[in-house]
Length: 354
Image 1: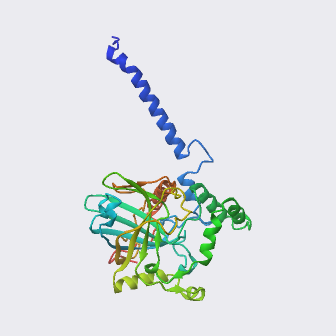
Image 2 (image 1 turned 90 degrees about the vertical axis):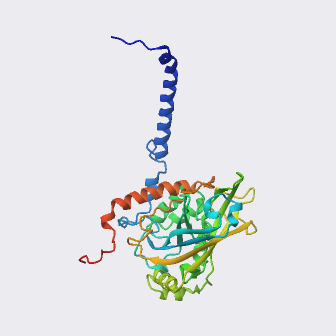
């Protein structure tokens, strides 16, 4: 028996067509975003692949910043940040932190003196169930202005046999030589504890009244910096940073002041290669306290993905395209190293045979 459509079914038919059309558009947008419809579009997988050295990646390790060490500690908020954001992390209190000191290298066995860029990654958790993750560098600004330019930089860097590759890249990206000058001339400290780490990317803080401010932040060490000469640096061991910070924290907690920098109208919020002027408003919001160092193998940061888009209520991304690009690339890197878990040198269980 044929069932005739009811009047309601007839009336709803255009709605079903509209829903189907919307679904098709969403699917099309998703496949385009994923790069499935364009072979020359930059995708997270392409970006992660570009980090692989000629001999292939170190299986089981992060695809970049592969060398690092875990720590645990707290963030002591002084409450000053509550004027900028309603996130609980900025209210007066002490909050749990898991973090990682790291080096900007694809090689987990690289000698510390040979790597210029150092990093600090943090995961804050507050009693209201919120979580905030951030990954920072000791550089005062980033090497390039867009994710596409960063991909081009990785491609140029991989052309070891072409002496003109980096010259061509630098000519096409006028912001890069400034970063190159920083790499060549910036002093190196003797410890992670003596380094300042900067967000570089811009984010938006939202206060209790709904007012929004674009910010960056820095973690400024309280330890007095010891600057190493080039000769002193060469004499340091291949793992001197890990050994030094372990010994230092064993002797007492190490601290960094969190400084939030508020943008003025017209500041370049979408371009991390451009530093903001020094006279911008700065708010000291609290102190990071590192109280225990743990080896990365099976340590608390080992399986943490420091995705910069994991933000609590009261914070969100800005017009800076890098956090979204980093988030997508970090996910690819995490999935790959998770699948390669058997290759990672985990710490043997107590009593297990070597």
